Image 1 (cartoon, one colour):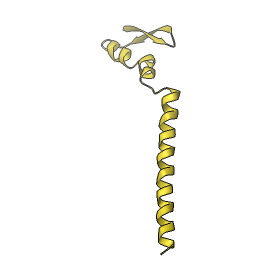
Image 2: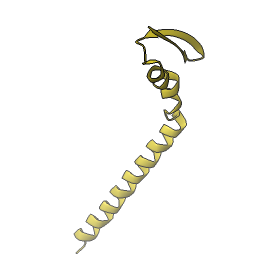
Image 3: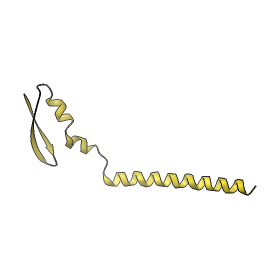
Image 4: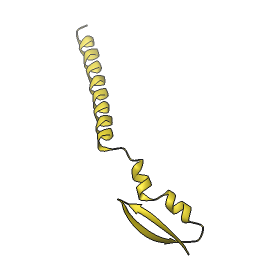
Length: 71
């Protein structure tokens, strides 16, 4: 049996796995996965940009429809 130590939130945990799976387990550890997750600030900025784009599209649509109605 293989044995790997993975870190989660700064704590080390020893995990037993099948022989040959050690590297896979280390590569897919939660600590590494979380390091690639966007931060709250990045998520907020992405949401803000998305809302801004949608509002801009609605404004353009509204102006277009107002123009059509004035014909």
